Image (cartoon, rainbow, N blue to C red; front, side, top):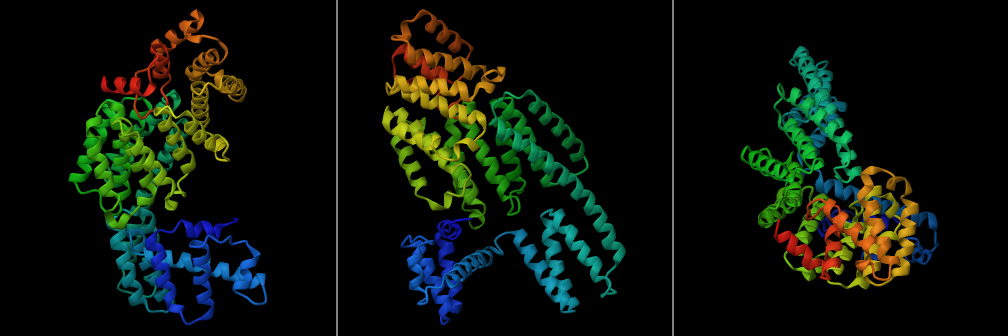
Length: 503
């Protein structure tokens, strides 16, 4: 992969850079190690192109490309080794692997007492954290050790292994089911348009309930929680969903289930809460849970924070948007764009620019809004999104073109939309998008669309059939509210806030 080294260096946090420098001081008197640090600083600080042939001479008088490639590989290897060493005891799983590795080393040295000692340490942590997958490996190593240690009861470990395999089969089965559901939910973008998916979620929950009757472990309780909230979201039952999420969070917190092993579950549950609150009419509580999420992101040395910081920022943007703090939201997004550690998040580029586009739209700065959304549509990642996301982004661009009086361009975009999503527009589950597109075509082709009787009938019919406004829902610019703003000749943002206050 081209520019792997550059991307790896850019992804490092300040703490990881500092640790890498400390890690390499072990070799500070060795010539090649000095070159490693020099190359690291050239790429990180001076932004030198790692494929620029001219920098080879800075390291090797002979201009040897092979020697320089070896140096780059050495730098990659050293960075990776320092990251592993820095994080090897940051969580229980890493500690288990650490002890298993030591148990293996001493086993091969025929020092079976020390091997058993490290195996015991690994077992205690794995049992405490319900790591049935790792316990499977651990028990097999115990059985292997019985050949060399007569004090170990092989029958005991065979029975433990059998019981563990049953638990592993159940949890693996549940994990696969939940992974399948989560994948399908992401593909549908939680649109609520897939009845088969809702039925599938119901069936899985019933299956999990049966299994949970005899296995009340924290892991299965979290798995059950995953499925129930997925069902409620797919059905758009937000009032029940937020009640379920907040009560589950308090229950798990009171029972102290959010230990280091399940810390990610805490972050996920808080993320669900802060994203559901605006859509359930409980906006007043959102700041409480945003602060809880912010605090949770710092726990256990910032464990998993890189994966969930974006959700925290996204929620802050929503909070600012409905609190009339648009400029603060824009500054937050711009700060996010400068944070290199967030670039590893899937679709990071699309989410940041799409948020900026909508925020500038609120301010009626249509030029800046179009510039931001163009960065999405012209990017190579655009076609990798779920088709309903592609449709939503494309419709927003047409709205912006109309607002900016680019009517010819907007009309061409409508025609392109019809061609590109021809298959989807024939599907009844996309009838809302199809009807809205017809209205948009009227705005681009009619001289006075608001006074045209046929156009007015389409608009009135669309507004009447539209569901209640949901803050933070899939329509970044709500189609119904945009049409109301056109009919009433008012700013969209004011109509949106007024509707939101009335929820």
